[in-house]
Length: 204
Ligand SMILES: CC(C)(COP(=O)(O)OP(=O)(O)OC[C@H]1O[C@@H](n2cnc3c(N)ncnc32)[C@H](O)[C@@H]1OP(=O)(O)O)[C@@H](O)C(=O)NCCC(=O)NCCS
Image: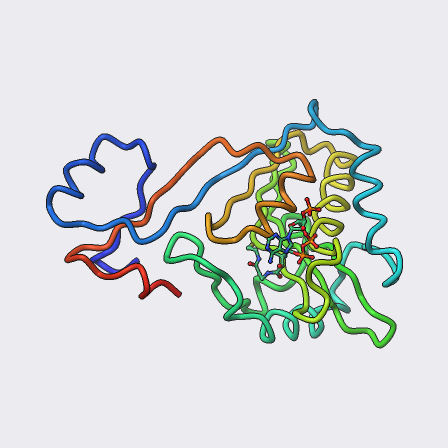
């Protein structure tokens, strides 16, 4: 985290002092939670079906590693927001699935991963946290982002996960829409502040 940046809860008591001292809010972000008890499994199945024309959603495996890395490399600069929601390019280690690192995706007829969501899972705690979700640019807006998230939730609930957390930028209506459809409830608001009045237009 650069020294001139602070990421705090929107209602943090220190926010007023920081803004008085010249720190400027340059971005808003949020956290959200999905609880197994509140899940509508039939609705999740319907959402996952939106990927059927492209072959459906399936868990990604070690064999999908090149496809995962390729989709990540092609979409590195597509994540709205500032430091709180920066997307770090995947390393091979972070792209490799395991018991604690799971991925669900849509793989087209040519073998390319065209949509994926990656999560960190702690089965002992019955919890999972979404790392990120991405869809290949030409296929956005067709329900694929929602489908991979819905399918991941269905599978994780089957594995015993009861709580899933996610988060994102307030400037990202597509992921906000996808999360709302899947049933995530926003329960945290965050702000990113920069010192010395750095302009909002400097966000990446
Ligand atoms: C975010 C992302 C994964 C969403 O996937 P997608 O397949 O394009 O989204 P969906 O088609 O499932 O749409 C989900 C909802 O958002 C809405 N939506 C989609 N794109 C939108 C846009 N550009 N602006 C406003 N709303 C949008 C959809 O209408 C839908 O809601 P609705 O059914 O109530 O109308 C995709 O846009 C993407 O890859 N973005 C770049 C990476 C990123 O920002 N990832 C999120 C951070 S982890």
